[in-house]
Length: 65
Image 1 (cartoon, rainbow, N blue to C red):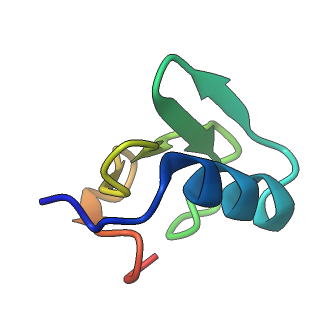
Image 2: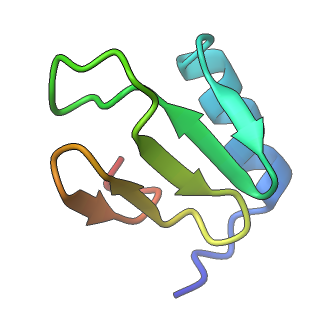
């Protein structure tokens, strides 16, 4: 499901909100915000805004994040 948010807006917002992150291809990776794990297990697709936290199994869209 495309949220019609330009990828650059998603990337800029996430870069400001989560300075300790990395970009891998078309994914923005940050530490889980649902667990106290320090590994970057929350992945946000920069094209769609959809995200999955592989540590907690939570997922959703950019607006829910």
